[in-house]
Image 1 (cartoon, rainbow, N blue to C red):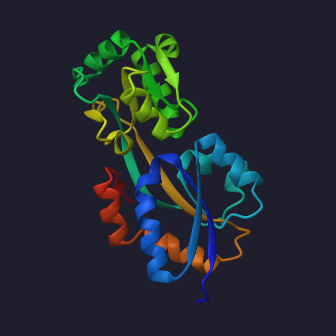
Image 2: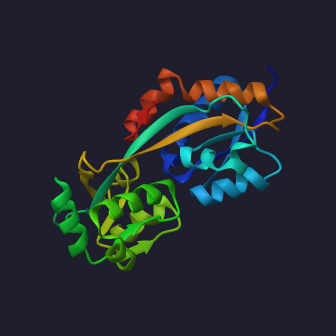
Length: 230
């Protein structure tokens, strides 16, 4: 197979493992990969408007959008990784109780501010959790929306927000203390799926990268980065 340059769009929450996996694949295959990251709404816009896309590695929510889904091969997308939602505080700060739904609700109501990304797949899941807990209105006033996963971490590390609520893989940052995942009764997972674009000029190389994302070597990276493969 001739060396190709692949244009990939990906969810911001999967940045860390892809930063490691992409160079591995490039060395093994000779292909070059250019990745653009974004939140779910940004990825939908990229999928529907960008002229050149070969592959998407995105939250399932993106591929549920009819316009975005129409840009990819009709075969079912392949799930490559998943991550639970968790809570973190600034390094050394007191760890609140989130062990039960009732304890989590009390912690959220007592929090001064919460960093998250409402316009993301995780944000959609959080909105459902807040509704289930009956605290949607209260959380609107406490939430400090961030533009990217890195900014969620920075907001809490810098003291701009008291809590961070996002994928546990993002919260595994040395500047934060991961309190833990949400209680099992409320837990949601953000699932990242890969799909090949219908208009890909390099479908064979795109398929090779998709298969690499499903490999044991990629799985070990996902696990090390706080995600579950597949």
